[in-house]
Image 1: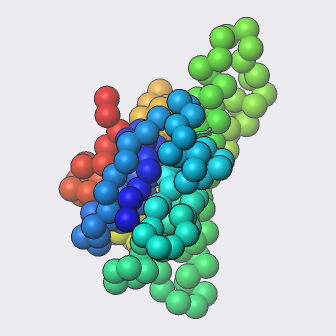
Image 2 (image 1 turned 30 degrees about the vertical axis):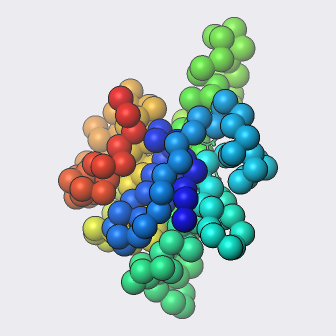
Length: 195
Ligand SMILES: N[C@@H](CCC(=O)N[C@@H](CS)C(=O)NCC(=O)O)C(=O)O
């Protein structure tokens, strides 16, 4: 299998952590999605990373599909029954934080005269609400790895990477303490975005 990724992508980071934690044999193909790479476009017509190439089988995207597939190749982190939907919802919450920070960043890398503050604020407010929600339910998040918290940990890592000035730890101390367990994991350190 080959994973097309960018080292700065938190969506790809989820898959990379799963690969490391489950000891799977997957080659990494590094790309820059904004360079309109033909290999990436062949794999995913949306031009987004990650995409998982599987020999003799269809290519998978987007990251929750890839993660669910990779998770099933080892001892699954996804319990069956009602809890499965809770875990997938927590995973979606982590993805939503990433989506919001990504959209916020896209607004802020435009020339300042083109900034759409309404949209940037919506993304920032969604992120703050999601982080506050996580602070409130921190006892439910588990440690170290589960299917839901995989995405939440990558989401928090992405807030640190792209929006460090939010200084979320000052307002969410329980979440900050919980996150320390993940920051210390080798697979999390080994997949950190390049400086
Ligand atoms: N929902 C997708 C989002 C993937 C995504 O947006 N990846 C970003 C990199 S972090 C990307 O490739 N962006 C290129 C683009 O939007 O054209 C997933 O979970 O895989």
